[in-house]
Amino acid sequence: MKNLKNLEGVKILSKNELSKIEGAAFYNRPYCGGPRQCCIRTQQGFEFCDYGYCMGNGQCIWA
Image (cartoon, rainbow, N blue to C red; front, side):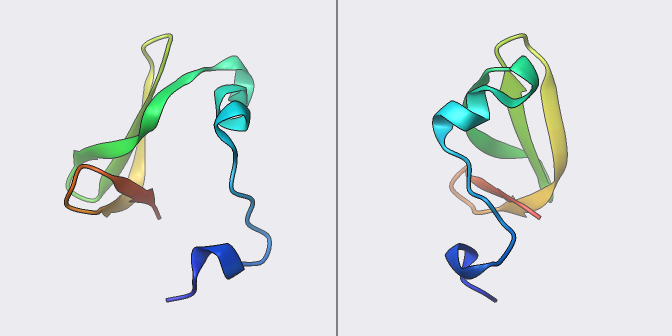
C-alpha cells in the first residue's frame, strides 16, 4: 500500500478547508458508521456516509 502522503493528485485538506466545503461545517473527524462505512456529520445535522475502512479505535479512513 502506498504512503498516503506520496500519492499524486491527492490533496489533504486542512481543518479550515474542511469546514468550508459547500458551506457546511463538519464536526470532528470521520467515524465508523457501520461495517466498512465512514461517516461525517455537519453542524446542520446532515450525516454523510460512504465506503471506508474502520481502524478499530473508532477512526475511519475513506476508501
